[in-house]
Length: 299
Image (cartoon, rainbow, N blue to C red):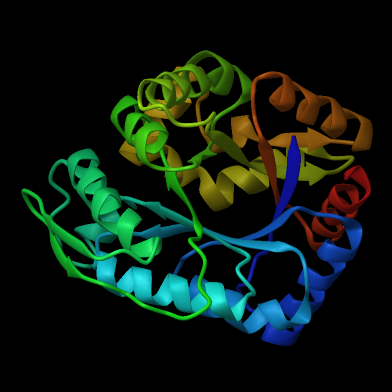
């Protein structure tokens, strides 16, 4: 199981983020992950941070598909591929109704069907091929030609059966949120594997994004996570995966405790079929620093 590290870019300069990326590279971390939120544009940030490093992979988890046409996203992603020396993993996903409908004023009718069309149109473009795609709700005709760009790895954030089917059939794998090892072993891994096998594709990646705090006060940190991320439990896609795991909310899926406790939990994820454990440091500044150091030492 590989180890990835999420870097919280909020309030950070490029120099600060670049220094964190270089430290992760020196420690042997496999990939650095950024989120697409309401600050930095994640792909642009990756292009800016990449010169601080030479070998570590960069990933965005994930770019919401609704505001960006496949031709536009392919042009941006392939540009970043060249600027990073072809070290990009492109993650895409549907986002959530409160963002797509509430903030953007767009329809989120049948998101799994729309995402499938989007991925079908995007895949050839990322490979440098021309596309003439006409779906029920999406049309993409054109060709993106950027010299030196290799096809970036494409993954899909998928938690439900239809999205996992698309991920297994059309992408390199999935990223998960709020999914514990039991959910990965009993639902996510077998569902995506069946789809990949039926499509004649290799075994998919399952990248588990997990809130982690190496801490001596796990109860206090769990409350911190509840205060910061508890609202995610009301989002339909997240609520469904939490229910599958029998969890009341996001805080119940966190990995918290001392170094030995956290290491044992990481092994449970590995045993469940996780291919990459994405450490998302949370808690106080001291806890985050301790967690990052643990991730560096663990690899």
